[in-house]
Length: 91
Image (tube, rainbow, N blue to C red):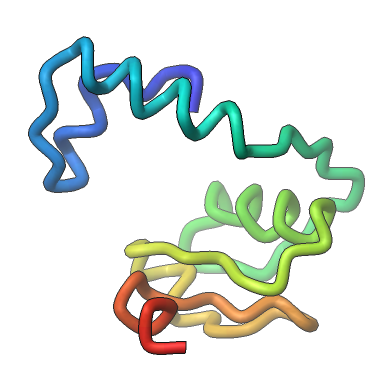
């Protein structure tokens, strides 16, 4: 997240740099930093994605909302459901 900068536009959100900074600040106000304490090896097709499951587990999250095809294939890990944005909004 600290390296978002211009990468926000990669997700289909075309925002000027000043608005990107506002968005980052808003997320930081409501977000929570989590230290993942347990390593997992669940996303075999793309092991770098395991960090999202590790963080969600460390935070006690019930959902991971993602557009990542590797995570979405997993669909669930323990109590954590992995959903697309549309699936999450339909809850």
